[in-house]
Image (cartoon, rainbow, N blue to C red; front, side):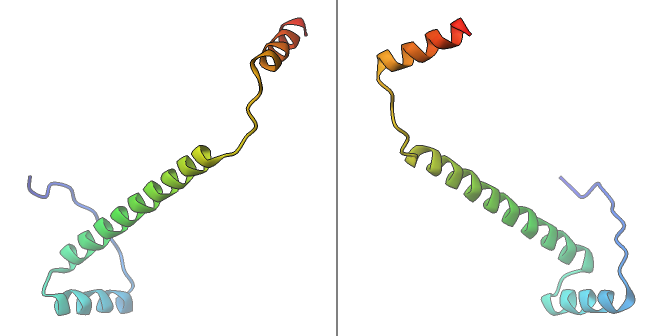
Length: 83
């Protein structure tokens, strides 16, 4: 699918010179450089989010919580219904 959405990005003159120079060194247009930068940021953010979810899942799985016996669970449940 071709490019169909347009975005306007404003740079100060000095910053734009740096962007133009970088694009020229890479042999690509300024627009392509910006698209590449956005894609890289999105990919990196997705990887960070994935790592955070994996770490959270690992903490849940590795949690060492005491497991109550069945009769203790029943007593807790009964107390809840009596309150």
